[in-house]
Length: 156
Image 1 (tube, one colour):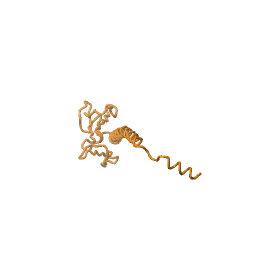
Image 2 (spheres, helix red, strand yellow; image 1 turned 60 degrees about the vertical axis):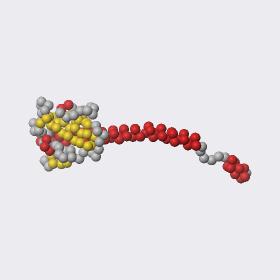
Image 3 (cartoon, one colour; image 1 turned 135 degrees about the vertical axis):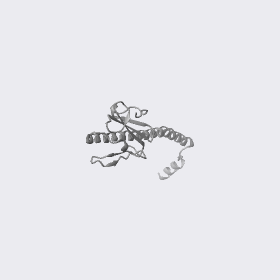
Image 4 (cartoon, one colour; image 1 turned 180 degrees about the horizontal axis):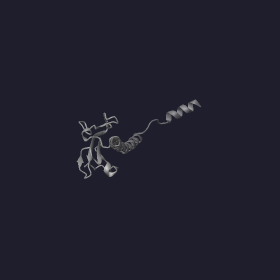
């Protein structure tokens, strides 16, 4: 019985043929060609979601400040070198707003009743513009009801 098994193992070819290996490599290449662009697109969507989230968080800061002081945060305090806006907290002390790592720029403008850019005192609305690392720009305009659709909007 043992001799028969040994003889059967010697006759049996072990390993893969070159054609079988090439077919497997081609299939893996096709799957990679499909998966890599999908992955990169998901990454871009993540950057864009961070930029939108930062715009909404800044809007919350503006509305909180408006509730406490009956005016929006001072325009001079809203931008500085490095595009990191900072806002007075409830006690009036300036606090940094740190944008997400994948948000490359943040800009805030204040708008009066005519739609012109103005200082924060006496303003009717504000406009927050964030740019993600993917290059898309998102605008949160309080006069128009929040985050604006599309990526081509700009503040006034």
